[in-house]
Structure formats: structure tokens, C-alpha cells
Image (cartoon, rainbow, N blue to C red):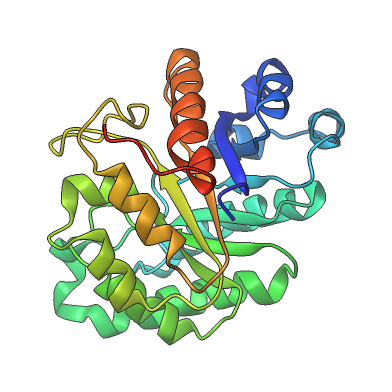
Length: 264
């Protein structure tokens, strides 16, 4: 399952990066921001389908700024739903395997009404999955100290195609418990999607793995022990970081199938 590898690529850069990813045995995780998503044309879709045809599969990262699945204000939530509908429609047209989404729980505003927020957010994702059969939706942790909200949301929605996206970089900055504990409490049984990038624990820098201080040897061991299927997406911020991330992953994750992981 370590071979189920993706690299985040902005939609406008897909033509420039597709061949490089294919040569490294990876596939794209295409990011389409909201403004670009609203402007997608039939020509864009045809071009992306052509570029994606050599890959066995790919993933899509939906817009995440100003998306509020649990908003108490109905028009705000409706606007967010419209954006995610566009993302799911595009994923269906491109035959994406899964769509990464941020659930954007804000404890400042909703900690006193968590049940209400969960009810609205669960309905939000249930509506998307009912309307758009096919790809999974993977909900990504951002500033979450624990998996509590993600776990409650997944349980409340009760949708097999609603899964978790665990972001190692976000976890390293914001979490108050180890990723082993996080996965233990989450009790993943269906698919889980991992975002891999590094930092020094104080800022979400999206460095190549090995350039920060995340314990990737322990991370790989934790992933190898999972009883559920999983996929991995690297999230570099530059071409140089992409190349470094691919090299590190190939040596420390893929090659480790045949030999012990080297110490950092």
C-alpha cells in the first residue's frame, strides 16, 4: 500500500509535471482552488483527462478556504455545498479515486454547540455522497489537537465512503497526542489517506520529509501496522521539494520493504 502514492499538483501545472510523476511511479493529487473550479471548461476537462490517462488512478484536493460544512448560517453552508458539489462533479468526470476536503471545525465559535455543528456537517457530507456516487471523500485534520471531532463526524455521518485524511505536517504543529494514539482512537477500518510533508513543529511549512523533525521512521512503522488499506500523498511546495520528497519516500518508505529503515 506504500506504492499507492500521489503528489499534490496545482491543476495549472499538471501538464508540466505529469511525466515526472509517472517516471517516479506516482500519480497526481490535483488541487483546484475555488475560483479555478468555477471556471473549468470542457476543454480543461478534456486536457486533464488526456494527461491523466497514463495513470492507474489519481486523487483530487478540493478548495478549502471559506468552506464551512457545519456553518449555522444556512446561506453560508449552501455556498460551501455548491463549491463542494463542483469539486465532486469534476472528480466524477475525471474518475478520481477520492476527494480530499477540509471540514474546518472552529472551536472558537462551535465548541458550545458541537452537536449542532456535527449534525449540519454530517448532513453536508451525506448529501454530497448521495448525490455523487463514486469517489471517496477524505476529511483532513488541520488545527485539530486530537481526532475527537473527526471521529465524531465520521460516526455521525455513517457513510462508508466518508474516510479520514491524516496530515502528518498539520498533526506535528497542532496535535497534543502522538500519531500512534491518533490512529488508535480513530480506529480506521476503511480506507485512510495520508498527507506527508515536514516541518519543525512550529509552522506548517510543507517541507520535504527529512527536512524537518517529524519521526518518519516511527511514522512508517505505524502505517505498516495498519489493518486497513491506505494511500499516501506528498505535498511539496516547489519542484525542488517535490524531487526531494520523492527521493526520500522512495528510500525510506518503499525501499524499506526489502531492507531496514536507515536512521535519519
